[in-house]
Length: 114
Length: 110
Image (cartoon, rainbow over all chains, first blue to last red):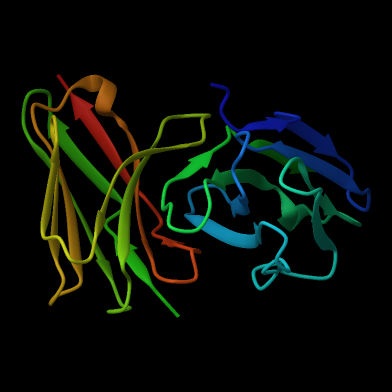
């Protein structure tokens, strides 16, 4: 079946502009994660959605970052007033729900802020 | 919080075995993962092990867990050039939010 998809694959934006990144999880997966990967770095957790529970936003680096998820489907990560330090690959992952420990990752969106 | 450490680089000759090591700090971590990331791609789950196991084998991959020392290793037998990638270790517990290491770049040369 289809894996996790993300769009766009690449985004170049000017400093100060807002951007929206999209993630389509695997159908039926109740859990969805967003991570940030800076060049040469590991994965930095941003936010976690599990079913209809309140999302865990503990990893969001500032109030310029927000994310939404509609039910158990698409999620969007929004970065307002982008800064050069926001340049990174943003990865989305989904998981099948409680008791299932396997995360499946999308290919990522490479964001470049000029 | 959890901290996961890995060496940054490993270079091996094709056909040799590769061993990638990882340490973690939270003794309550219940599941430990290995992911592979090829250039320009997302992370691919290779295997994972629960903390009540000490070994898991899957074809050319062997995962060893020393829970006392909080040490995890991934052994790749008969390493091939296609195994060249970044390998991430991750540790997680009941929160379902695993902590990732910085990744080990495996370079396989002929």
